[in-house]
Image (cartoon, rainbow, N blue to C red; front, side, top):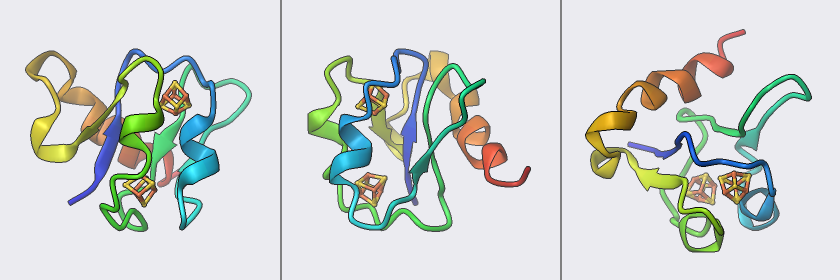
Length: 78
Ligand code: SF4
Ligand code: SF4
């Protein structure tokens, strides 16, 4: 399982600062940051520090943002 960053992300990067395995990444042209599902350890450190509540455990991603599960994973395939 993994944590997933969804639509509200405003790239404020608080999550990046607390992630112990550096699996949250993004690019200058990206609208949001992404979590690498292959590296995320489900530690949950990132979830409470996000000021816009954009981060969810995979099983808890709201129905309207289900597409963000693959969107996060796909970023790391490129
Ligand atoms: S998920 Fe939240 S804390 Fe992380 S970059 Fe996006 S807005 Fe910032
Ligand atoms: S749950 Fe932990 S390992 Fe996964 S992205 Fe968040 S801080 Fe990083």
